[in-house]
Image (tube, rainbow, N blue to C red; front, side):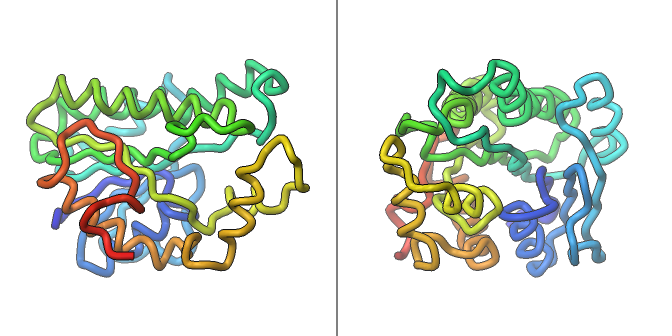
Length: 242
């Protein structure tokens, strides 16, 4: 178990739940998001409000947040956004660029700053999605960004063999993203929406607070049991109990 963890996107959802779970295990957490999370500003939590898409000021923001050198042993790149759920041809190029900027290029900027400055860094986990593998209709720019994030993870793993990289798909989780998806009107063009509604309020779509401790255990196992640079779906791990 690492003693110092960096997590992006800690204001809500999975990022906040991971933060709370690590703090409960006496792990120091460096967290960032555009706004502070509720209820996690406690001892051991080092928060910095950061706009990860502001490339001009990002290096200075990272240094102010993490310090140089950075002492974190694990980085979880969780911050991301969902594009409007619609056919690809109906989503604007500007929207696609915004999604790619946060879901992909901000992670490159973080890694390019972090890797030379974190001598104790052992593991990087990029939060991915099954949407980046399945290519189902409606996921448009979000799916493209996660597919690209998977490849970004693989490329960095080859460049930095001293650090274990993985792209982790946590599965369906009760978050604001799922609130949006499950409240969309039924549409026969998008069969995955019906699947998400069916998972709601079942064990197939857990609360982030329930999932976070299991994800932490899977992240720890992945470092020694999975090849560096690989994408993996948490729900399909051979050692994960249902």
